[in-house]
Each structure stands twice: as C-alpha cells, then as structure tokens.
Length: 169
Image (cartoon, rainbow, N blue to C red; front, side):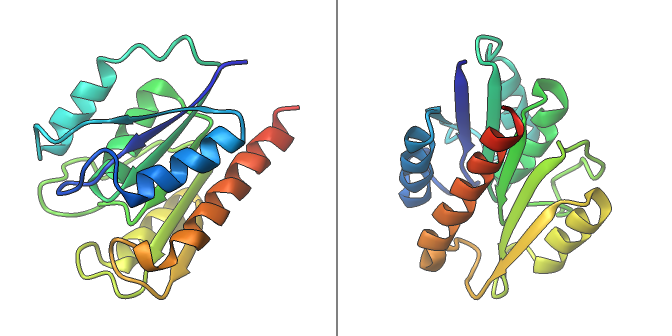
C-alpha cells in the first residue's frame, strides 16, 4: 500500500522548516512517503489550491494532508477533491479576509492544533470550524507558529497516523 503525507506550509513560511522536518520524521517512522509542496511563488490561497490540484496523487492508496496556517486552508479546500483519509491542521487560516471559502467537507479524521496566544488566526476560528465539523481540537499554550510545543505536535500527529493504521486493518 502506497501512503503519502503531503505538507502545506503557511503564507510567509518555507516548504522545509522546523515543523516540516518534524512531521516528515514521524511520517517516515509510520511507513508513509512524505513531500512538502513549495508555495513560495504565491500568497494567494486559491492559487495555492489550484497548484495542488494540478498534482496527480492517484498512485497513493492513502493520503494525509498536513497544513500550517494558510496551508491548513489549502489542505481543507483541496480535501474536497483528493479525499484524503485525514487532515492535520496547525493554526489553520479559516474565516479570515482574503480566504473566500467558508464551508468545507473535511474527512472524518480531521485534527486541529491551535495556540491560545495566536494573534494571527484567532483561536475561536478553529473552535468554530471544529464545532461545525466535529473535528478534534487540541489547544496549546503557544503562539501562531506552535514551535514551542513541537514535541507535542509530533506526538499528536503520530497518534493520528496510529489511529489511521488501526482503523484501516
């Protein structure tokens, strides 16, 4: 079975930052291929979705999308097309100006991580999303980037992948 974790970085971030490397490590330990899409050529969330949709991911039997901030929005919008088995969203940029889509169809296994001190994306935006779509929400005493709780993010992501492995056997 071919399994892929695809990472989507944030607006002002890079494809291979600290969070990316941490998620890649967990992915590989759990038997997933890993890739991170380079979106540095555009800060338009819908253009990023369009770029992602141009990828052929049909060779994978199991897809997991990970998205940070704008990448969380991109992951969730693209989930309607690719139907990944799970979303792992880190301070997703929902319900903000410039992000036109406000209704989503996330998969059942959608986990959202957010920081209480986030001044970029209000924590209540993740609460609203999780309440509406019955997604798992974990809050941390951290800021928007959540780098201060990176070990906890890795642990939560590992738990999600373990859960997927248990439910697919």
